[in-house]
Amino acid sequence: MPNRPNRPNPLRHLNSSWLKITGVLFLSVLFSCKRSSFSAEKIFAENCWEIGDTLFFDYKHNGTAAVDETFGVEVRFNPEYSYRNLHLKLLCKNPDGQPQEFMLNDTLMDADGNWLGEPSEWNFTKGFTVPMTAPGTYRLALIQYMREEKLCDIKQVGVWKLGE
Image (cartoon, rainbow, N blue to C red):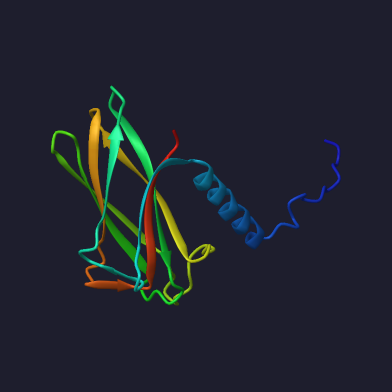
């Protein structure tokens, strides 16, 4: 077997920080390019999301077949946000009045309080899927589920439909 010369790795100059930044940029472009005209948002004047301050929105599903619709949720924080995680509850009532409940839970910081990933203006973005079994209007509600009366250092929360 002939000896092959050692070839340098063409990726040796790329470090993990560069790859992380590229990944974050890719996800940002993915989410921003796929937003539809449907969206709902709530801005908190005092930067606190009270437990009873729910973001309600209606989504009209015009399809005739059952499908899973994908939405995105974004939460904008102040850098002083004092929790390592975020718990959100999504309630959905279909046109027949049947309720569905979804939990959106994520860890935002490590044990030392360092944000995981690269925070973009202190935003958290996540996709979620809602099964839509019949045409009609679906009533959705997004609730902060941290079990605190006031969840402070939250500036805004928004929901949008992905795709279309």
